[in-house]
Image (cartoon, rainbow, N blue to C red; front, side, top):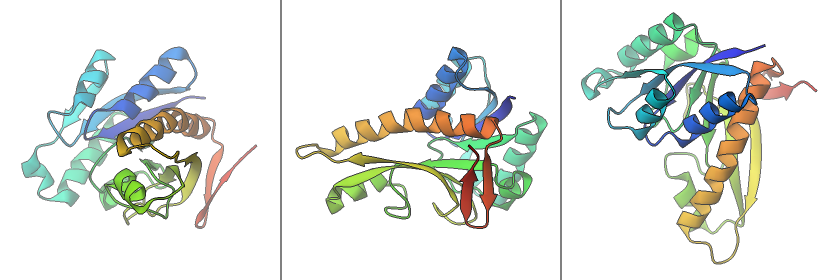
Amino acid sequence: MSVTLGVLISGGGTNLQALIDRIAEGALDARIALVVSSRADAYGLKRAEAAGIQTLTLSREIYADPEAADEIIAAELQRYGVDYVIMAGYMRMVHDPILAAFPNRVVNIHPALLPSFKGAHAIQDAFDYGVKVTGVTVHFADGSYDCGPIIAQQSLAVEEGWDVDELEAHIHEIEHTLYPAVVQLLAKGRVHVVGRKVVIDE
């Protein structure tokens, strides 16, 4: 069984690259049909193009109406036969047009252990708070920011003497392993949403 992915990015695309690499290795039963970027200068677009993946960039003018922008994105994702929408460093909230088109099929990764440290500065916020343990969360997106049902989490002990850059590097290492693993669970049809919780079949 294989799934078709649409990946949403805004920046460097390191999680996108992790997915591309796992697919190339045969470790992930998926193909990426479309990469959508909220920024024309996102380096992730170069990663997609190098892998021969179709890309789409929307201008700031279009994003001025978020619902209209998401209608365009949803239509393109459907046109490319996407099964799951993978948010990989996408710095915009997704709205009803995408969520309704892909119910329980829009997935996000967050660099903290939700529900702690929501928002765009989670690594810095956790570091400033002085937590001893943080980590990474993969969850389904819903209509609220960083609030959807949690699929998987992996913790990270924060070592004494790390600066925020070292913490970020370790967080990204986890992301690049955990996200492809979760997408593989989705590809195998093992992930089910039951109310607020996610159940993963053995």
